[in-house]
Image (spheres, rainbow, N blue to C red):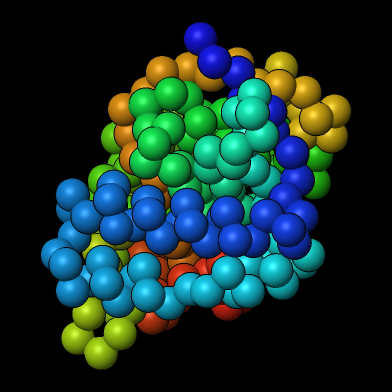
Length: 209
């Protein structure tokens, strides 16, 4: 089974993160969304859009043994929101998403969080359920005029820390799964309520997975 090295993203990772984000939407999330929504969603970003979130939030990447970035995740530790978790379609089903989420949860615990929430795209609901997250509500968010993205608001109460700690920068053993990466989230705090604001792509705007 392959291993993934988990580390904090740096600004030089922005082009690779953009490419993964765009491909994951167009090739994986497209199984649950119409072409016009996929186009509106994936067209919101540029590589430069990711630099500010990398510097201001917790953005982590998973690398293979050759140093290729296979996926990324973003956490707002102050608000307890997982703002993104995307996997390069070339690496789907190889445990990248699980490795990223384990690192995100460890980072959240290190910041004193006892619970997390996210807004998942419909194609990723089963993946989060397999990790113990629970669906609380469904919502529709406007990506562009008359272009909407249906999402599931999902929450997780953090339990014991995993063996992986981001601060140590150690490799994470991959676990096989078949779930694709999620849609950008929206939401705030626990208990969870259906999101009501227009659906942003949170990484480019770094405003608030």
